[in-house]
Length: 290
Ligand SMILES: [Zn+2]
Image 1 (cartoon, helix red, strand yellow):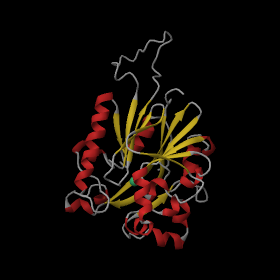
Image 2 (cartoon, rainbow, N blue to C red):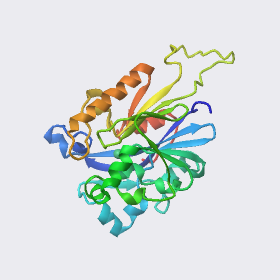
Image 3 (tube, rainbow, N blue to C red):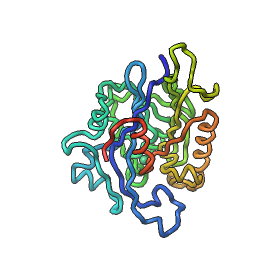
Image 4 (tube, rainbow, N blue to C red):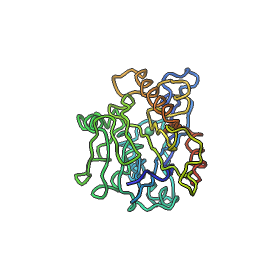
């Protein structure tokens, strides 16, 4: 199989949260200020279909009043689904870029927070799902506690038809897409390095992009929630860490992703930046919901 041809960023929803959720060390006057963040997804075009990275919210949990009251208990957090009121947001976001969910041949999940794993049910029995074993184990160790205090809802992934592909640390997923273990935000959070086929070749087959050998292939590092905002990357300031862990540990993952990006001449994309993610979609020439 050849290298992926392109990436297609998606906006699968929006979350309005206190700034401290993404910047737990920010100044007190900023901490409570609401920030409206995109819920990202990413399609990667492969030879025989699409790889989907992250699956957004589980829409029925937000639409049903009783379920909403059970699962979404923070009064100062607000969630918005994208697309028509009666449509599934993942289906709608993929439809907006001309992709049918049936053409998704593999799925990778950065971590089990509800804004990333909620659409997984679409792929049960249909496509392999790549996650870190540490993430799955942590979420399943005490599902009640995971729901009550860790933002991980068993209902999102507890389906016996899911074809799990467990990863133990850094590992290739498909040609050109590698998972990088960036634990800290959650116990088995993973980010992704995508190396694209060089489409800048001339008819002679010679690359006329003028890139050095290591930078011959265009590519990206997708931090996901290892770095919510561009500020997490630029200032190397922590994102929130999982229960019982100092937020500071998350900086290690940020530095690691930046080092990978520097080595290959790639750009690092933060997961939830209100400006950067939508702008990246524009750059890629794809429409998103706002
Ligand atoms: Zn998230």
